[in-house]
Amino acid sequence: MFITLVILAIIICILLALIILIQNPKGGGLSSGFAGSNNVMGVQRTGDFLEKGTWVLIVSLMVIILLLNVVPQGEAVSSSEALQNEVSKPAGSSQMTPTPLPGLGDTTKK
Image (cartoon, rainbow, N blue to C red; front, side, top):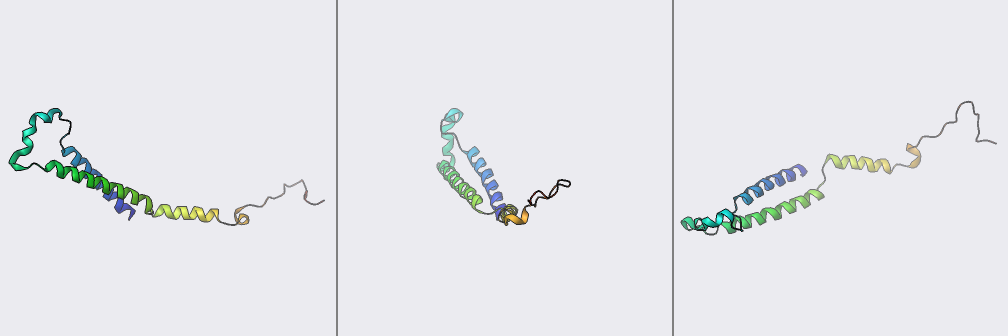
């Protein structure tokens, strides 16, 4: 599931980049001299379609990114569970007991 969402997010990013590059800039610039070319063959509303497509892709990318934060990553979950199991072990099971140094004798008894 995680890998599927990552692949889908990459595809949406590529489509979003292509749609943004296709759009005419709103500020004019070089395209302001060719303002009449937008009405060729009666097609006047392509800007609205591209703008709505951009918004749909942006919202879907945001939803997928939020889902990626919720969906477990598979192998990373098992390692975090192993770490949690290691932390939750009883204190005596994983600690080593100190051994007395040779030659000093038993200093614990008096």
